[in-house]
Length: 280
Image (cartoon, rainbow, N blue to C red):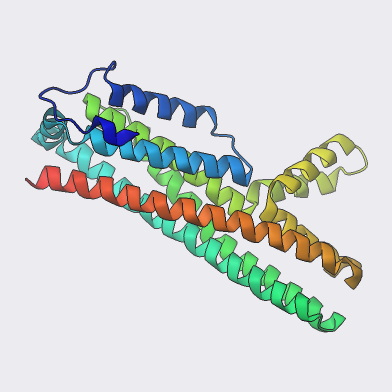
């Protein structure tokens, strides 16, 4: 859809221009869905973010857009945005690596379960899976801290032109979507809620139900919970349930991997375009 707006123009697009309107619409939709917590809703936001970056790349083709970015007084802000985009690409890489690691552990565990090893061997493999997940979460938490650092820089007030303001808005909403992806992969929010629930379990049944619903909505967390339950109960009859949850987890991981890979390519393209503009 964005390709239809590639016509050159001698002026900066007004708010009524199709590409400017499209950017506004995409930004508003993504802002409205910042609380996304399921793999399908997060995947939808990743697709929306890809479209947004496509539209921004079209915006960057306008001569006056390029002139605005090339101005010396805007240089510091542009370089700050480029630094932020580089950090966001690093976060994307961390998320992709975490998904790949989780997928590989998931596939390996599924393979072992299909061979139906002894109960003791299965328990050890379950623990290996959880150990791998724990190590991966440390990298996720570091990436989340980096996102907060970029976000704090964006919140610093300053005199920005129209183009810089748009790029800052795009970077801010990109941070929000990536944050939801990382939280989903690590299941950090759901786990913290489960922890709080354990302290007041006899008094707050309603909160327990809510946590269980959140767990069901996160396939990765559901698989992890099924593995923990199997270890705790020492009942290998639950293996079929673990297999089912692992399969669902693998499917959601695949979708998120594809979404992040496409988003990374869009972000690199936008970054290269801006670098070319300011280097001319």
